[in-house]
Length: 125
Image 1 (cartoon, rainbow, N blue to C red):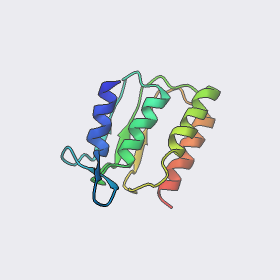
Image 2: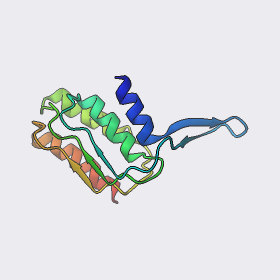
Image 3: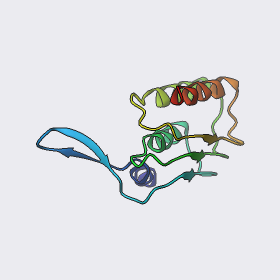
Image 4: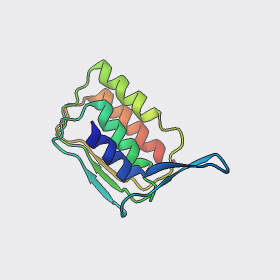
């Protein structure tokens, strides 16, 4: 789980609060990343949506491709709800650069695929 947190910080940046204005912002902690691959990692839906959220909110606005292939998602009702909750938790999308999300051999069915497709389409409208 700690690796997920570190990866999220690298993708999203570290949250810093300006004490004078009380405004929060994310500062980059690494150089720009255009592709993020996390294949065969045994990710749960929750961890995968957490990483996808971090990639989409990437402080440097550079992530174009995310590959979460070969992770053991399934099309259970719980996982559909997990995708829906995890992806809808992104209130303010700061990037429109994400062009490709690869989910090969993840055992998701049409219901989960529709949830993910709807979310990706919302990024580009």
